[in-house]
Amino acid sequence: MTSPYTRSLPPLTDLPAPRRLPDEATHLTPPGEIIAESKGAIRTRLLRIFWAPALVILGLWYLLLVLYVLGASPTFWFLSLLSALAEPAFLRATLIDLGFTSTGLGSAFLLVPAAATLLSLALVPLAPSVIAGLQPRRFLSERQFQRAVATRVTTVLMLPPLLVVIALPVAVLLGVPQPWTGLGAGPLSSLCLAILTLQLAWVLVRRTVTAPKLLGVTDAEALRTTARIGRDPQERREAAKQVLVQDRRHLPPSPGSEAASAAFTPRGAVITLALLSWASLTWVIPAAAGLGWVIFGITDMVTVIVGFTTMDLVDAGSSLPIVQLLLALPVAAVMLLGLALAPGTAMMLSPGQRDQVTDQRTYEDWSHRARVNPWEARVVGLTGWITAGWGLLGATMFAVLLQVVQVATALSWVWIVAGALVLVPLLGLAAASAMRRGLRDLLYGPAGDYVRRESPYALVAPDIGTRADRAKDPAVRAALRKRLQAAGGDHTLEIFDLDAAGERLWVDDSEPGAKDTAVRAADLSRGTLPDFGGEGSAFTGGGQANGGRASGDYTPPGHGIPDSVTGLREL
Image (cartoon, rainbow, N blue to C red; front, side, top):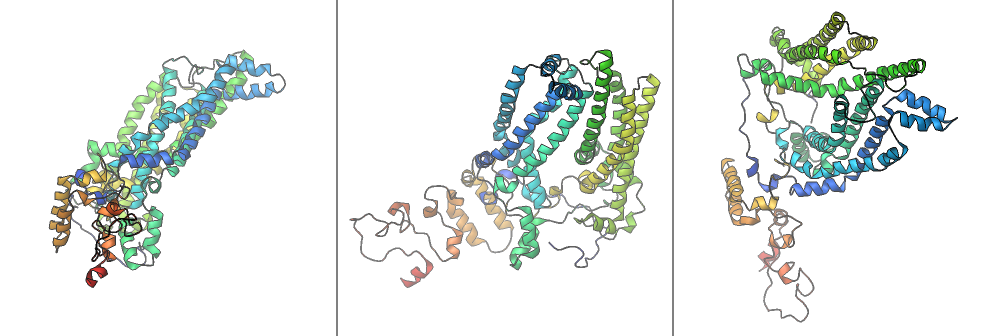
């Protein structure tokens, strides 16, 4: 990989609409282009390294349990612990007042985290099915492919704690009996901390289930290093082709093409919201959760202090009145509609930059891409501004509705001001980040529909059986033969070897006798012929003393079977 600054590239403009490539039949992928032997092999690898994510998930469950216990009223717990230093009876009274018992808490801390971690272990068999169908060649870079593998496996393992955090406030609103009697300031502050904890645990778990550990492939960064400073020129060129491929989905799209109006279609609206939601996990959600913890924590502190004067320290009421939630629904609907149409609106406002584009190719470095493609830079920037504008409009509409209905509270005004000053700008940055990475996905669809990256592998794992089982499929051999014939050039010898191999098209090294019965390309390149039952064969004792024969066996006279090309010439 060389930087685009190191050499001048001829500009490419006025490109025609990219040609969509036909879909590849993954059930006909030859075994030599499949990474893992089977889904079972991936599951075995994941079980071997499960101890690392299990430790992270176990710690996460302990933190979530602590937050659940303290969430009834963090300030009340803190003051009770201080009082317990002088009089231990205060702590016992606090447990009873908040709906807990010492026996119940002891059993919960002893059993719940371990049992919940076992739920993630029970989901391990689902992980291979989630990544088996991934096609590495459909990803623009090796890094994207490996991140997709790690993200999908992490999603499976983190599913139990994620569902629990989502279901807990729903259960509280439905009135399920539990220590949390409502969504007061204390429970909401604990939920905000739980969201931050989930995100941190997600990052840690994803680092423990990387693609090199699960699939045994070369790390993307190591491959990039080889592509840049590798000693062998041929190896460096092959690594560069595997690291990154040029995106065929050029911007701006050709006038009158399907991509030019894709942003205003229902599919485009859904993709826009999906891209914005994914970017918000990095830009908006951590800030919102941090603000929630601070705001609700201060609210809980004020509530407890005021409760000392009213002698009502347990029932603090809900910090989310149902009327405010109902008023937020139409405002959220209007905002989502505006956010979904933001990229299309930005494209309509950027016709003047189309003639200023000097190169429509896609570069990894955003500053370089923005310099040669002002149209894309303007669309990305306008999308961020329009999104932030819709966010500010939503906050204003919500404030007006609260005033009209007269249900505004001090807490709601704090959230409106904090949202307008902090969350709205971050929402705009999230939209710009989403368009930098996903504008082509929005207009054209997946990159793999238009280009295939050069990679030694086309599939992660067979959907059914193993690679050896797939080699026995006549349809797979017929598809490989057809591919060789369509490739052009003289492939007569390869086709002959393919037909002669039959069910031995693919041999797993772990199979007994694999080295004795399989013709290996590496052996042939070194001048070593197969033994055909001679020395080294399982039929003659595996190459033991006396030519692989037991002591006392009769050895016929004459020449032995040559084991190399040189030996064959000497006969």
